Image: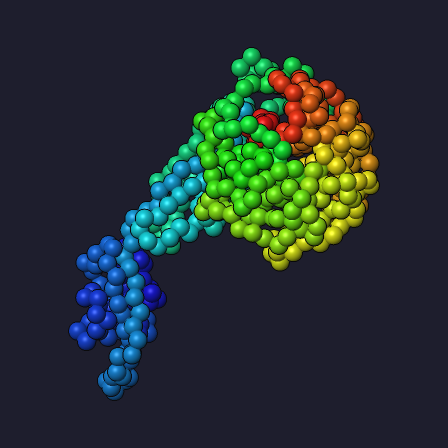
Length: 461
């Protein structure tokens, strides 16, 4: 595009040295011949049509009136006046939150052709943030105080067209000390001692839509913070599903190559928006799932075969994935998505077996693990120091179906014991203690998995 062109206006201004034509040929012979420009002058073409592509060439005139020939090549630009359209939501669509920092899901499209460029946000006061590159998701701080919250977004395309304002309103609550909120028949209270929201001991389980087919060895879940959906393996098959908490519905997605079985695990990479998978089943297969394209891509194989006790987790602090091998081994690995390579890390304090599982604590950037099978060992791994330390043992022996998840709203870790039990536990990092929570509605065994979404909900299969 020549300098001085404002591509979303009908009046196109050419600065010195440019010429233009509206016939699409690139022929400047009859253009601006009576409007030769000085270095400080401008000229304007009017009547250009939105959606049309225009071409321009350049020639120069000296003080004696001698003209150069037209340039051999020509530039082009398109008049684009169609603003982007879009929506905004909050990840997980929570009915309340104890955290002012939420994850926004802005979604926009640009049919005009210039492409999406930027976005900006505002709370109820409409004090707009600075324009920033369009991306999804977006971390945002809600306004202070209790009550209904509204977040606004607008989008800009590369031609400078700005969309109308879009908004999302929900009964989100920023809880102040000594406050409480109601969710149905359950009340969550603010604990002034530790500054966290504490869920009561009778916090209940509720049935959700069933996935198609029984969940077996290799069942696994992961939460996608970008679109607020949950993804899972059914186990003992290649089937892969997506669960929408908003509509309480499952939908089949592209199957993985080969059956996911014992040791299968899933982890969502919030940096690149992809899901990664260990297939388990005594294989070294490792895959990447593209949510947008609904497709799997094989990646570098794990350093050794993965079986029961295999587990995968994503570290959002350093952008790496970490994996337990399982199969009674102490192997622990790090995966770099950029180089598509695995690296051996400090071995676990003991051999990991069925029930081995991992979760990542975004509050302290540490990883936590059950050893599984014949042991109630519970460990903490520091990726920076590449070291393991033992923490308080679990309240029973986790085995097939054991799973861990981190609740970033209250800073606690939750666990399914599995092992044909209904045991469900909560781990307090500050006191290094476990406590019993409401039992699961039925026993959990092979294929059991647990995941936390940003709407303050735990899900299990």
